[in-house]
Every structure is written in structure tokens, then in C-alpha cells.
Amino acid sequence: MAEKTNILIVGAGKGGKALIEIFTESKTVNIIGVVDINQDSPGIKLAKELNIPTASGYKEFINNKGLNEIFNSTGNNKVQEELIEDKPAGVEIIDGRSAKFLWEMIEERKGMEEALRRNEERFRQIVNAAEEWVWEVDKDGLYTYSNTVVEKILGYKPEEIIGKKYFFDLFIPEAKESLKKGSFKVFNAKKVFRNFLNQNQHKNGSVVFLETSGSPVLDNQGNLIGYRGIDSDVTERKRADEELKMAYTKLKETQDQLIQSAKIASLGLLAGGIAHEINNPLTGVLNNVQLIKMIVAQKKDFNLEDFKQLLGSIEESAQRCSNITRSLLDFSHASKGKIQAFSLNEIIEKTIILIEHELQLQDIVIQNELKADLPLIKGDPQLIQQVIFNIVSNAKWSILNKPEKHGGVIVIKTDNRVGDNRVSLDISDTGIGISKENLEKIFDPFFTTKLVGEGTGLGLSIVYNIIKEHKGVITAESEVDKGTIFKILLPVNIP
Image (cartoon, rainbow, N blue to C red):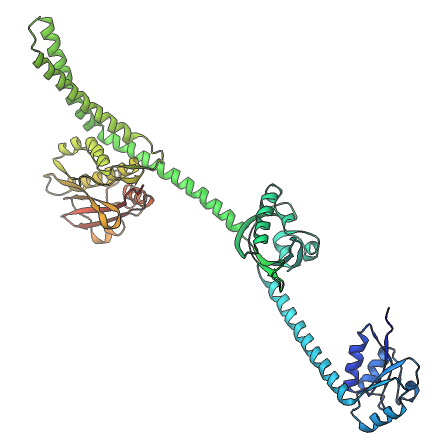
């Protein structure tokens, strides 16, 4: 071990006191004495507290064989001259100017240290008051710093993880290896990362979801020293997201049940008309079959062309029944949520098969103005059929409730909006119309102007939600006593 430098401090004012403070912290300097004519000076008082020998004159210290340097902080030229004259050979004297300069440097350093201490304290207060966990790790992932928020989030005090735990030690066991591998991939790339969602294990064993952001700490050569960053506890948000998903799923199931209930109710209303619609072609089939049986029984000559016509008539009637029952079955089935490309025009035609006869009985004419070569749209065809059926059913009710009971017209029109990759579907009627104040509320759940028993107010609400789920738009325009038009826009299927 190197020998210490023995010094004598002459002058124990502020400058002398500052020298005592700095040199007592040094491991290579030994103060053999402090001298000042004023025994109440701040330096003398400090020296006595530190058990450093003191005196009012330098004579008793100057001949100390181990003395190496004398610091003259008095600033007095006479004292400087006396010290030069009396000092032993080989002892250096640092004069007042040098001592003052050193003192000023010491004071400046002390001021910087104090400012640094205040800044560090301010930083510590800020990071500990934050909601986020602020941390630093070395290049191996070992924690080198942590604010106190870690205890609030994960239950560990900072001293339990600093220098003791690696960041991957806190991951849940089942995801530890994969998360560790992904993290060090980022480390090796020295990349900034943000909002990395990861599951950690609380000290009590519970799972905590954290969103982590961090940036690399590099040395002057660009080598990775470690990472520093913050973690936010998003466990409650994650739980709320899961609850929201469950609520949405339940809501979707309820909506599907409502749609299916509406279909069943609609089938009940259509039953009479559909039965009549099927009965007519079946009657034709039976009549033609009986005619053939009668000719065979009477053993009459049978013209082959006549027989072909009878078979054609039977086939046409059977096909009509088949189309009706197929449309009925398609409509009655619960939607499976299958998204596919389909023709809007075909869905309209299938729906008309179900309701056309019923409308004819009510003296209501349904007119189709379907655009040829209409692009396919993408979605659930059964749900779109429900939309058309609900709007047409409302149109029928609106026409039947006009004071002058003489029927009306429903027009279904499709078109291709080439400019914005959408197709349009307009359904208009010549019914009683909707007042301006009610028009703003027609898509609200349970809103209805119908009498009790005539409707629940869910039909148009269901229509609105179905169109919205298909990324479409639906609006309505109406004039009292003149009629209503529903305008729907649906995106085309882009392969």
C-alpha cells in the first residue's frame, strides 16, 4: 500500500475548513495538524470534532519528520514568507492563491454534488410517484435499478430484485422460455420496443398482465450495456376486454335468437299464403295424373305429344312446389354465421317467392327492378334475406294501414355503384309514411308506432345491426301519406 501524504493546513477559515472536508475523505492524505490564530474559526472547530491536532501557530508541526506539504489558506503574504523560511527541506508549500483556487474548485464541486443530489432526489420522487414500474437491466437481463412501484405491481420490494433477479424470472412458468427467447432477440438487435404484452407472476402467485416498453443503453463504442424502460399494469384492462368479449358473444347469441324468433313468427304469418301457393301447383299435378290414369284405364289411343305436354305441366308444377319449399327451408334455418360471396338479386327473388302470394291477396303489387350482372356481395345470405323480409313486411303493414284501403305498390331496386365498390338496395312503398320526429328513432330497439300485438319494435333494430355487421349503411326517407324508402349500401366482394 502506498504511503499517505502528510499535510499541514495553515489557516482554518472557510477555505481551510473546505480543505479539511475534502482531504478527510481521501484515502491517500493524512492531515497532521490544523493551525489558526483564531481558535474559534470553523476549520479549528471541525478539526477538533475529527480529532485532528490543532494549534494557534505552525511551529510545533513544521519540524514533523513525516510532513510532505503545507497548505497556506490564510492569503497572508507575511505568513507565506515565514513558512518558506522555516519549512524543512523537501516540504512543499501551496500558497494562498493556489489554496484559494483549490478551495474554489472544492466549493464548485460541492455545489455540483449538491445539485446532483437534488436532481437524483427529484428523479427518485418522480419515478416513485409514477404509476409505472421504471427499471434498468444489464445486458444479461439482471435488474440493476427499480423504482418502488414494482412492489405495488408484483409484490417485490426493489431490493428483492436488484442484483438478484433477471427479468425473465418474473414471467409465468408456461411462457417463460418463449418470452425469454423473444426478448433476447430484441436485445441482440439493440432495438427500441413498445407495448410488449407479457404475463408475469406476482409474488403471491397470481398472474399480472404487463405492457413493457424499453430502449437500449449503449457505451461509446455502441456495445450493449443493458436496457431501461417502464412497465404498465394492464391486468384490469385485460380482464375488462375479456368481459367485453364475453358480453359481445352473449349479445350476438341473443341477437341470433331474436332473428330466429322473428323468422318463426314470420312463417306463422305466411303459413296460409304459402299453403295456398303450394296447393295450386299440387292440384295441377293431381289433375294431370288423374287424366293420365283415366286414359290408360279406358285404353284410349294416347298421342305421344299430348303425353309429353302433360308431363311438362306436371314437372313445372312440381318444380314450383320445390322452389317454394326450398326457399321456405332456407329462410327458416338459423344463420350459421358463414361468410360467403353471394348474389343479392338471387336472395331478393327467393324472398319474393315466400311473400308474393300473400301480397297479392292484399292487393299489393311488388315490382322488381334488379340490375343485371350485379356484382356479388360478401356476407351471410340468410341475414340479408331477413333484412329484405323485415323491410317488405313493414312496407306491407304501412300500405294496409292507409285510410283508403285500395292496396299499394312495393318496389325493390338494385344497382351497381361502380365508383365506390358498393351495390345499392332500395325498397320503397306507397304506405302511410313516417313522421319526421319518428324517422330519427326507427332503428332504436323497441321503438314502434304499431299497436300492442302488432310488433315489438325490434325488426328495424335487427335490420340496422345486420347491415352494420356487413360494413354497410342503411338510411330511410319518408313523407307522411306518401310512403317510405329504405336505402341500403353494401360493399361488393373483392376476391
